[in-house]
Each structure stands twice: as C-alpha cells, then as structure tokens.
Length: 275
Image (cartoon, rainbow, N blue to C red; front, side, top):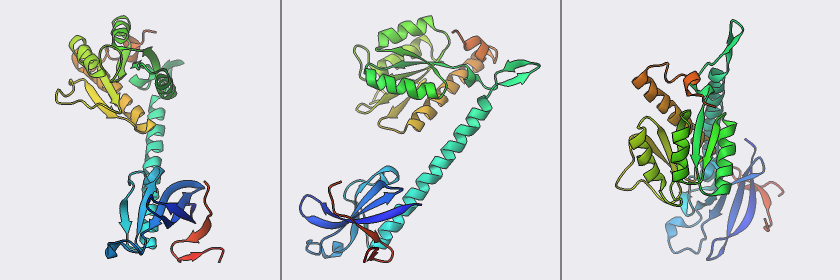
C-alpha cells in the first residue's frame, strides 16, 4: 500500500507532542499524536489520536479517533485507505461500464446511438466565473454539451429557446432568483425537467424541494457531481418516456443543436528504522 510513518513534533496548541506523519505513496493521509503523560485524565495518557486526516482519512475530524495503541491507530488508517481504494476501483469500473454502454455502434454502415446519454445537453446556472469554468470542464469531460447562465432569468430564457436541455444544474445564491426559486419556476413550466441544486452554505429548509429537484451539498467529490447529474438526465428522459412514449425521449428528438524534523518509524514494531 506504500504506507510510511515518520516521527515529528506536533504543536497541538497547548504543547509540543510526539507524533507521526502517516504517508501513503509520499502523500500525507493522517497526523497521529500521542497524548501527553501530563494530561489530567489518566485514561487518556499515552494513547494516540488522529490530529488530522487527509484523503481517505478525511472522515475523521480533529480530536476524534482515540486509539489505545499506535498499532491500533495504524490498523485503522490502513483499513480506511483500503476501503477508499475499493470505492475508487468500483467507481472506475462503473464509469468504464457506462462509457461502454454509451459507445456508438454501427448497424448496416450507419452509426446508431447505444444510449440516450449519447446526445445530452444540460444547462449550468452559476454566477461565479471560476466555479462555472470548473463545472463546465468537469461536465464536458463526461460528454455533456453545457449551456451557461449567470443567473435564473438568463437560465429561464435559455430553457425557453432550447428544448434539447435535459437537466439544469444550479447554484443557490445568485443575483435575483435563488436556485430553489429557479427549481420551482422550472417545475411550474416543465415538471419533467430535472434540476440539481448545489450549495455549500444553504440547505432546502422547511419548504423542501419540488419533485423534479435534488440537492447536493458542497464540497463534494467530482465523481458525486457527475453521478448526480447523470441520474438527473436519466430522470428527465424517463419522465418524457412515461408521458409521450419512447420516441419523444429518443436522442434524435432531444438533440437541437513541512518545517519538521522527521524520523522514519515502524508503528507495528515500535522502533525507528534508522536506529
């Protein structure tokens, strides 16, 4: 797994404590700190806790994850990394299967679409230019044609002119109408149109979401964004199929257009590697 452990002195705010940097392939995944023998609670003395977690260990927050021994802490980190690897492998396999299903096939010399997702246009509504650029790049890599709007009024105008749009991805806090208000406006005009609402600061609240919308809290993994958008597009297509029949939802009809002294350490043997 490429796991290495390096001794370091960690400033915990109240004192310098003995600690370990836990690296995986030279990337930091956790910082472990040994509880001082001078601490008031005798049950915590000499125990180890996770001062900080990164990457696969990010689920643990500062001050959580107390372990009775260094070996127990190392075992927990190794398990967290293994589980993260398994999730990543499953996601990569799933994306490969999706790409294979979407690959065009030739019938009688004519290229036929293998999936309704082969022709897909979505509308991105985001007032922050840098965030919008990131989202456009992410969604274009997935194969989407991305229309851009900086606010809800512009989005509604585009939706009126572009019947090929299969889903809307919107931020919440924008000039004028919020993302939640935009989702409700879309629902009133076209309840079959799926909307993905994203925000790092504001949830749906007591009013909840219209039936055509889902909420995705930020920050989140790019893979989660792509998966949620894919589901939204499929939801729109399924809704159109149910109402108008499979021909109306076919792609042909939808396509309009530092600083520490470190010492390598083996936590399972309890010995420095250079000693």
